Length: 166
Image (cartoon, rainbow, N blue to C red; front, side):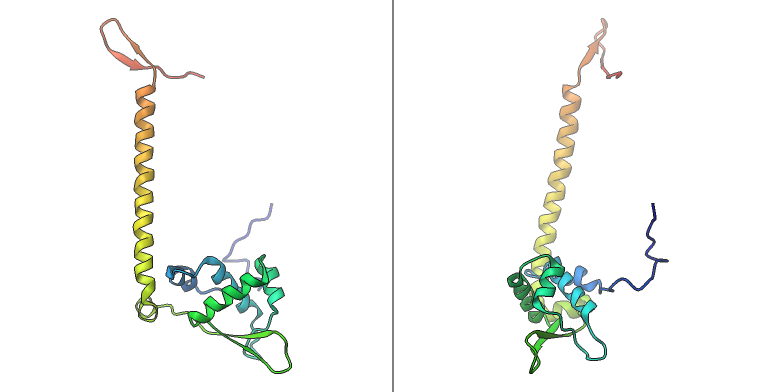
């Protein structure tokens, strides 16, 4: 079996994606991992000579394994957050995409998208509550398991847990 080492397997068959898409932009209420993937795919299709990407909506839908309607909705989110400008060139019947770099600084990001802070803080609180519930459930489960564990009581009254041998 061949193993893949990201640090040494640089054959050019990859597309770099800015971590800000996953670390900051997913703090926006309507920006999901699919939107980051669309941006990454547009980056893959970017033609440096022309200065834009020009895949068809059908190509994008195929790459994202979704419908063309979903691609259209996802494109509007990228436009909304300033990650892409979409235009149609004369004589072409598909869109062209001018990619803009994502904001990578948290302070600048929140200045540009203040709604992200409130949404993210709400998500953090919900996540922490889930984590606490999970930890509490684990403690309860362990206590129940100990309480339900069969014991052997010696004639002097001392009880010891019975342990399964097999």
